[in-house]
Image 1 (cartoon, rainbow, N blue to C red):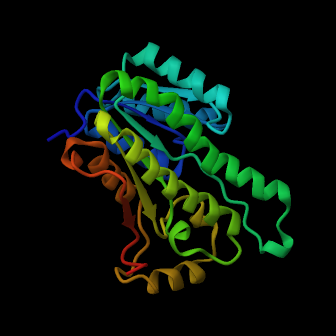
Image 2: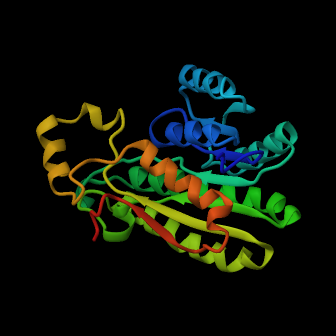
Image 3: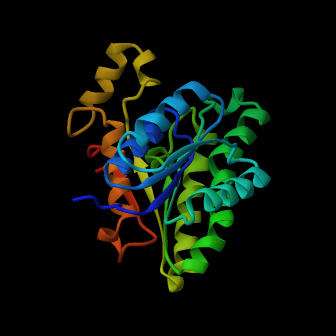
Length: 248
């Protein structure tokens, strides 16, 4: 059963990791996929080809969601190319970790701008289309770090916690128009970024998780499918933890 048949989704930051995983699962569920990338053009075009081969419409857009004007232009381009937008996945994000005493103002500002301001930019830009349609599902990619904090990640934690507050507020604002807004809080997800870490360190993290493994991009993508589809038609303003029981 294809849960997203004939729906159009925008996924930011999708040329690798979790964003790429979401794009592939969405396409497998019948969604047309518009996705953005910051600089990795070759992987983005390869993904576009892979998704199109699944029989859906797919297109890669070079766009920086942290820039208000670029977010506005992106939404206009996607509506023009695809005819509608049903789902917005705010996934673009970066980390610039450091202890507060060593963190520069630039590193704090950059993380807030890319992780949090991008959610404002994209949601505001997409809202007009959703309001016209009187339907839409927004999923914001937060983190367990936004729920419990983490030493050395005060900028990242602040951005991801801010995302949760934004999610709940938008759910309240737009609910009467049948527009839903939820967040996902992934735990330790194994991607090409974690592949570069020391195996012993990674194993110790796995051992501390009740399910005894790191998550996969597919684990997060499947939760996204649920929140994007009509299966969750009566769910809004929620934070779904995809963390193997880490915060239980």
